[in-house]
Length: 603
Image (cartoon, rainbow, N blue to C red):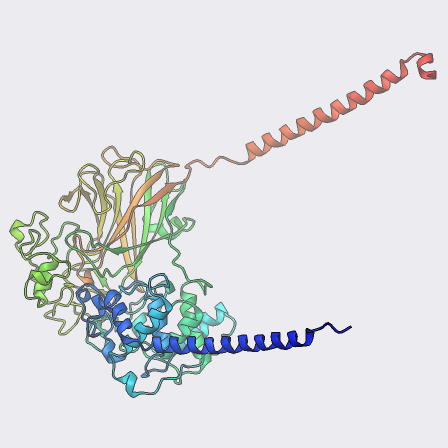
């Protein structure tokens, strides 16, 4: 049966659907046009740039912002059109997506942070990319570049990575900069500069979580293919077949233990001291620490107090610990571009103030200090009035605010401030050094001493090892103002440097009357400091850590046999009792049935 008006209704609904579809298409088109137009909104991009970027990259995009003297590597000069992380071949401009990715993800272990969606929206990001591109005329003069194609990666094979990968790594000369084992200690590493003649440090390939362009397999393949524009790092796209680039990529990952789906730093928050009944002999360290679990801790620059270090060389330190009834020993490992085994170092050496270093670098006055220190800053240029005692002018500090660009009489134009041929050992003004820091007394509750050399109420002990000496020193710190030689037991120390890694062994009596004792099954606060002599670190200018924990596992390990035997016989006795009880109940029931009267049984 035909329903009246049904056909007309269908036509009407059909028209509505077509109209809705048309509106949707037009809306999407208009939205896309608006978005594209918004991507060219330079005024909006300038607002975002001035808010988040100009302080480092400069108002003119030339990399000369007010924070530039404090940053290594220096902020990128956008006027050059040279960008490190790209998907385009060497010599070409980046794509908009490349620039957006860098802004979103940042550069780990540099001053470039990640700007996520909760800080810069997608629309603001498009405007910002357009504005950043406007600094370089090349973007308007050249056609948009085509990104390279990254082929499907082959399965990761550790054996192939360690053989074929290493072969390609060495034949292409990667080790000349990065070192044989990728620790950033190649022979040419101390001499490298970028296109702006600024010294650069090569990447430590054993730490993919620090890689500027990302540490995944795809990230590394892209970096190896396109290189880092403006730096000595070349791109191998077109120069090597993809299988060889994958081989190098996998060798780099093999150095760090293999690829990870999500690249994260394997940092710890506690180191466990393994108990042993053996004699602690530092000469037999390989066997001594074989079963001690290693723990990796992050290091960062000391930027809180005078003597600041905005660019420390070391960013991590690994530690192992063992102890017996009488002694406790530690094994410290960190990577260093070059061993400095001459010169001096100590935690109380004076470091020029930042105002002085900036003035030496060409600032007209202390008023040019981007930290806003006034010209009459009491911590400033007059070392005689500096109660911290660390603002004295360093005669060797020349014109580099980092204090490491001094022209050495024997070093010519060595930008790192020391002469050398890249060999494992070299001589400079300052030596490499390391220190373990402990509270002088076990803290009560959660309160700990100030992590920068302690405080007046809570002193710390520093087990200090100068790599120019084969002996340890003990220092007591009650703050950066008061670091003096200690009076407790001196630890014993043995140090060595090989393939870009320092290994330092320390031991001391486990108990002490004048300083902290290490009791079994206890937690002890522990912190670290590392001084890189090549980077002219000394005194309060250093890499350091926060407080972490040292846990001493039980000294006595009771045999599991007695409790196992006790449990066995206990369960056996219980089973015997249960079986006996069941049998007793059964016998009782049987006896009760036979003693009933004949009448009861008949019933």
